[in-house]
Amino acid sequence: MTENVINASVKMLEISDDEAGQRIDNYLLTKLKGVPKSLIYRIVRKGEVRVNKGRVKPEYKLQAGDIVRVPPVRVSEKTHAPISNKLNKVASLENQIIFEDDCLLVLNKPSGIAVHGGSGLSFGVIEGLRALRPEARFLELVHRLDRDTSGILLVAKKRSALRNLHEQLRIKTVQKDYLALVRGQWQSHVKVIQAPLLKNELASGERIVKVSLDGKPSETRFSIEERYPNATLVKASPVTGRTHQIRVHTLHAGHPIAMDDKYGDKDFDTEMRLLGLNRLFLHAASIRFEHPKTGETLRLNAPLDDNMKAILKKLRETKE
Image (cartoon, rainbow, N blue to C red; front, side, top):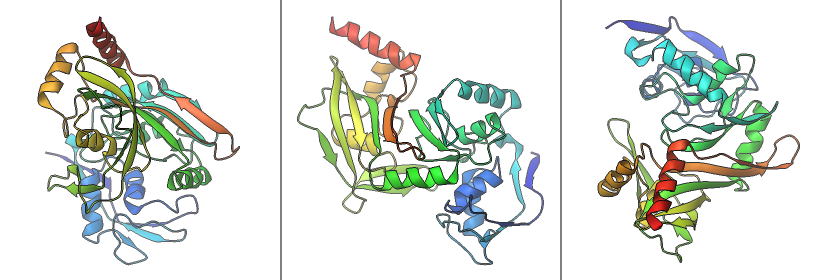
């Protein structure tokens, strides 16, 4: 198998003011395009990546003036998707942009696309947007969505906007609402789930989250949108932002999300698949936040994709 040299020699890179504040692993993902995230973690852990001549952890936050040593990196060519596939994905992202100005870009992310390349993927949303906006000097994710989750994704086009939006997320003034189709009849009195979540990473690199007293405090608010004979469409509004939070909290309540390959119910998934559902039914439907430059309150909505709309239509027909 042939190898592709992403970085042919050792590079010493100085961190600018615009680059400061981001984690070293995310910085390397932008500098070593096409390198799997697992490999980036490996070269950081082994000390091949150094900051100011010292070892750092993947979560180290870069500061202006830091000198980063980036080693030569080789990856097998099989990690690269065919160019035609990439171009098609990039072109499709343009149609999913629901808001854009000089500060930020808001995307209705399709299901099945990772937010950035890594874990064996050479293409992600952020790489696609950089290809669409080659003139943009700065494009960074404000937050993340799981690969199979669709919906609203914020991307900052300025470092100042990124810092402002991160602060809004930290003080919990950003309102995010998701739609999830869950198994069974959601109980009306279950309006808030506060269950601590513990993240485990398996040897394969797969992340599994479970409710545990040793976990981090986590809270999701729920309301019922529509009932069907064997399922419920719920609105889920996370107060905290833990990995897989909504997926694990719905499971904890006894109502796993349709087509969830990690936390779902096989019988329910089979039932939904027979109706035509071909993806995880979890969608970031709306967001409310203050514009980082003007201070204006923005409320943006992302429509469901055609597959989700078709499933809800079929479920409504079962009520008649």
